[in-house]
Image (cartoon, rainbow, N blue to C red):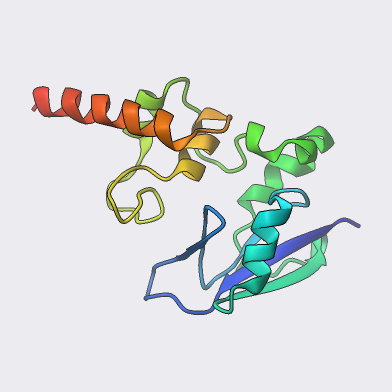
Length: 151
C-alpha cells in the first residue's frame, strides 16, 4: 500500500488555515500524495512547529481529513510523477488566468494572499500547470482593470 502525508495545522484561527511551502494547511488535516512537495518544501514543512506531519497508508487516512488531492492520483499512477500538471481536487478547470480568476471565491482566504492577489497554488490547480508570480500579477492587474470598467 502506498504511503501519503497527512498534515495538520496546529495553530490556526477558527475556520482559517496556515500557509507554508505555497500551501494552505487546516486544523482538520489534508492528505498529500507522494511527490506532491519538492524536497525544499518538505524541509520547510517538517521544520515548521505549527504543523504536524504524519506518514500513513493511503487506505488508513482518517475520514475527517481532506483527501481530494489523493483522488486524482489514485485513478492514474502517471499523475504521481507530475502533480503540478494535474487538477488535484474537485475544482473546475480553466483555460486562461482570467477564467481562473472568475472561479475564485473572494470570501475564501485560501484563494487569496494577504496582499489580495490570487494564490499561485490555487491558480496552478485550476489551469493544470504551474503559474508564476509575474504572470499572475500582470494578468491580475489587467483583470482588475477590466472588472472595474464593467461595474
